[in-house]
Every structure is written in C-alpha cells, then in structure tokens.
Length: 291
Image (cartoon, one colour):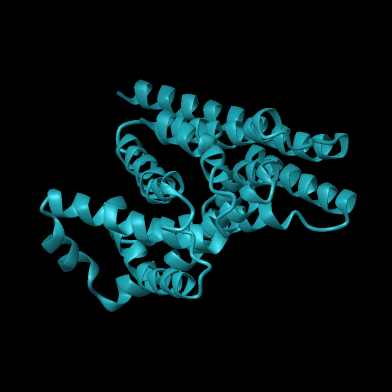
C-alpha cells in the first residue's frame, strides 16, 4: 500500500495535465470540494461523525489545522499550477528535497539530534539549490515552495492530535467554504470550468477527490505496519516517477546545467538513504543482542 500510494503521487502530474485548460485556482477549489465530500461519505459510512465532532471541535485543534490547511492549500495550488505550466521536473526537485528539509526542521523545532552523515546530505542539497539559483539567475521557487510548505505541514502533523482521516477531514472542512464560494463566483462570471467544458472534464474534476484521498488513506494504513526507515526509502518513488513523467512522457527539457544541480541533490539523497539504512540495521542488531 505504501508503494502504491507513492506511485499514485508519482503519476499524478499526468492526471492534472488532462485538466490543463482549467485555471489552477479552480482545480484547487474542485480538489478541496470533492475531497471534502468523499471524506464526509467515508466518515458517515464508518459511523464516525459523532466521534469526529467530539475530537475535532476545539479552538486549539482548529487553529492547528487552520495553519495546516493554509500550508497544504499553498502546496496543492503551487503543484497543480506548476504541472500545467510545464514545470514537472522542478516539482520533483521539491519532493526530492523534502525529506532533507524535514530532517532539518526536526532539529529546529523538536531539538532532534543529527549524526554527522545526516548533516552532509543537508549541506549538499543546499549546495545544489545554490548552484541552480546561480546557473538560472533566480531561485527555483517552485521546488522551494513545495518543499517548505510540505515540510512545515509535516511539522504541524507531528504535533496535531487527530488521526489522518479526521485531520484531513478538518483541513478540507476549513477550506471548503472559501473554495465553494470561489467556484460559485467563477461560474456566475462565466469563467467556471465545471459543467461548461464537457462530460469528461467534469468527471476528471470530480475524480480529483479520489486522486487526493485514496493515496493518503493507503499511506496512513501502511505507515502503521512498516518501519519508518522503509517509508523513508519508499518516499523517493514519488519524485522519481514525477521526474520521469516530466522528461520521458511530457517531453520537458532537462539541460546539462540542471543535471549538475539535480545530480548534487541526488548524491545527497544516496548518502542520506545509505546512512539511514545503516543506522536502522545497527539499531536492529543492538535490539536483537539485548533480547
């Protein structure tokens, strides 16, 4: 299920590209609205509505998930816009950088201790971004926005009290009113896409709920059953597939200059992966010896 979830996220640029004629802000609105309805149905079928109300309705929890909703909204909007603007390769860079940035935020917010060989890939990733910035004359802002918004979202999820299903339901509940209002205004002003661009387009917009919720629910289930170190390795399935989609299927250009900057980041990830695997094996051996 974990591999399937990351594979879904890896191929999702192909789905959004089918909706490239729909403005990115409308795609975000539909993603929120239909995801909210899908999650609502799941919770009602599971007879968890009263439990959700009891656990979710407090000022402290609302504020946590309000900030989380803003961050994930920024992430979704940036991603959808970037994919349909032809920047799939740069989006993959953002998600390659994300685990390293998450590790750094763990030090800043939770005082987690990093080993030497964990600091090295963080430094290399930073070097790669600096190189790409100098080479292109501007920051790779798409990658940085995606990486920072999702990493900060992860920080909030770490302290958030709700489970994945209830948490995502509360986040979409917070966003659904402004999203619905925006879609209604767009429809009234004649710029709305839903019901105006053909049946296939409408079905794809409704299907955004499945694209959003199914991988998240699969991941939540898998995360409870497999080691965190394995999740750390599997998470690279997604940006790898995104990168391949951009280069092989969507035909985006990948220059020699980009290959140097991305190569530095990939070397950082290889070091990070080997160090994480080695540390996990060492802990497993130590645990076995103690037993």
